[in-house]
Image 1 (cartoon, one colour):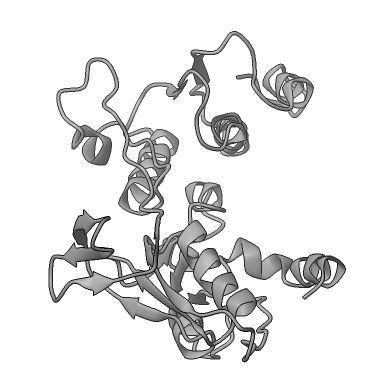
Image 2 (cartoon, rainbow, N blue to C red):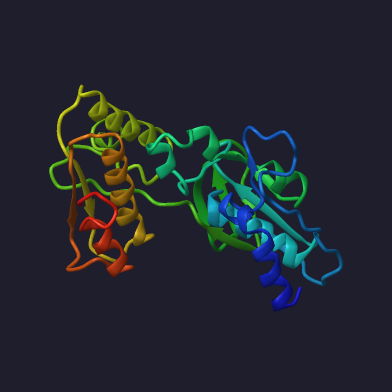
Length: 264
C-alpha cells in the first residue's frame, strides 16, 4: 500500500477511526460497525512473526488492525485485554449533555477477530519475561512473543486533599476514562439542574505535559454551554496549573470570555 493510497484510505475510513479502527459497536449486529470500511488482509508479504499487544484501547486496537493489514497473514497478532469491550472516551462529552448514552460509546472486538484475524484473549497480564520473550497472565498459560507492545492505558494520581483514589468514583469524578465516572458526572450535573445539588463546577488542569491538552478546555466549554442552555446558575471555574491556555488559546479565551453566551 503506497502512501497516497494509505492516506486516501484514512480519509475514507475517517468515521471508522473515531469509532476505533477494527472495533464494532457493541449493539451493532451488522458485522461491519458504524461508519467503518473493511480492507482485506494480504498474503505472501514475506513478513512473519508473533506480535503480542497488551491493552485493547484505541492504540492497541488500531495497531492490531494495521499490523495485519501491513504484515499480512504471516504476522500473528494476539491482543490481551481485560475488558470484554472498549468504551471510547471520544464523544463522552455528549453523554454529559444527554445527546448520547454510554451504550453509544461501547465497542466490541468482533471485527478485529472475525475479519482481521486478530487473536483476542480476555485476561490480565501479571508478569513479563523480557529475556524469555513471554508474559504470564492471571488465567491461563504463559504466552510467547517475538515482539511485545505495551499500551495498557493510564492511571490517575490522587489530587491534593484526597484520601484515596476511590473518591474519583464516588465524589470528584475526573471522567477521563469513560464509564461509571462519566455517568456519575452526568448525574451531578442533572442534580444542579434539578436544584437538589447546589454549587459550581470546578475543573482542574494539571501542569503540562499531559494527554490530550485540548480536553479539559473543551469540557469546560461544553459544561458551561449546557448550564447556560438549561438555565442553571452554577458557574464553571477552571483551575489551570499552566501559565496560559495550552492550545487554541485565542479560540478558548474567546469562548471563556462570553463569545457564546457563557463565562468560564
